[in-house]
Length: 250
Image 1 (tube, one colour):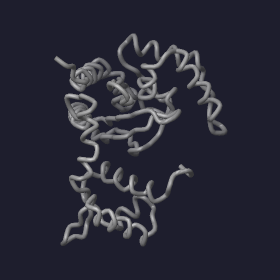
Image 2: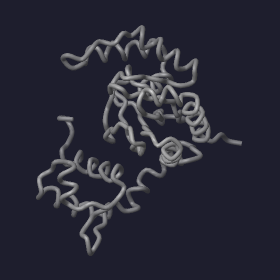
Image 3: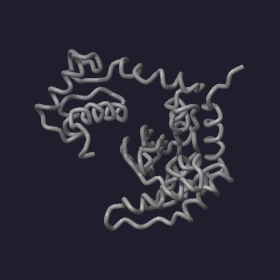
């Protein structure tokens, strides 16, 4: 994070803030949420407005993204040959379960959660959009590893150990490889309490053609709920993953 350009990072953080909030916000709301200085927040928002990426309501002075933001990445969905936008799939899963829905991709040694539908159930966990979690010890991460060879997975596990922060536990390359193999066999990846105590995630991979990196979609909920609804959640995920598969020619 320290190697990123601060102004560029802030632009993306503002857009991710709106992606999670999904409604207009004032300068002060954005400043407090992102812990920015008042003056630079105002300058940034008005610059994005002048460029056409945000609009500002006349009466309330609240900001919100314009359709230009949505169109920036629309070509990726079409180019990937997918039959539907992953956001649509996530909203359906959210409506069907009331639980947190996660969409992740690989970023170095981590799975980064590029989009999150927060849970609406009374007992739930919260995760910030853009959060990173280890590839080797998360359901989303293991789903992303499932397309790699055992040799590649082992190398990733060893590199994760070499780059881990002080106090972080070591991971066993053999155990990670075995967990990914098991997930491939059963058709889904499940972790319980490995990152957040009491929380479990069940995930499946969304493959993309060509050079498009794979995505993984998951349902996050309390462990007892995942265990109780496991078969139902597997069926829901499988159906959505099949519908989101790339189109084939002919």
